[in-house]
Length: 157
Ligand SMILES: C[S@@+](CC[C@H](N)C(=O)[O-])C[C@H]1O[C@@H](n2cnc3c(N)ncnc32)[C@H](O)[C@@H]1O
Image 1 (tube, helix red, strand yellow):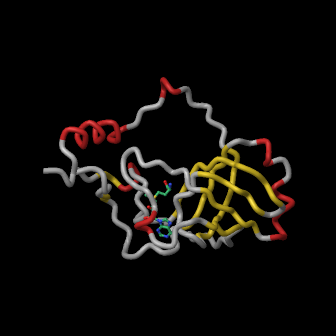
Image 2: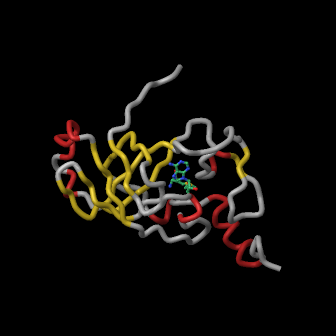
């Protein structure tokens, strides 16, 4: 089964190259960008301004290579199943980013926290409503990796 989708928007970000995008444990994503909606979809932004954060679902449109079910995150020294990671090399090349909504200007959403390349197609935008209490969140291998990397950085001696 396949699904055809059209982008609803394109992301304008400061990143022309993936090397410019912060990555790794503790990477801060505070770059600002604009989600430029197609003009005919702008009525769909009604009432969005009241939300502080948004989910952005987008396409890894410039990834190179084939999907890999085992991923090796750049900041860990152990492989993990791709669905336990945020690797771009997943079977369906979908990215998911939570951004802070700074302001709405017509068909433009000014946001903070972008981690996608300039010109990335956006498939959907939804309000972020977190209902999971912090004490019920488990961080899987990421917590273990933080401890391992702190003890022995991947590029360390
Ligand atoms: C690890 S992914 C995480 C993306 C998103 N936050 C997620 O969890 O799905 C972020 C990386 O994807 C790559 N990337 C960003 N935009 C891309 C695009 N349009 N096409 C291909 N790769 C992209 C960059 O290397 C960036 O550092």
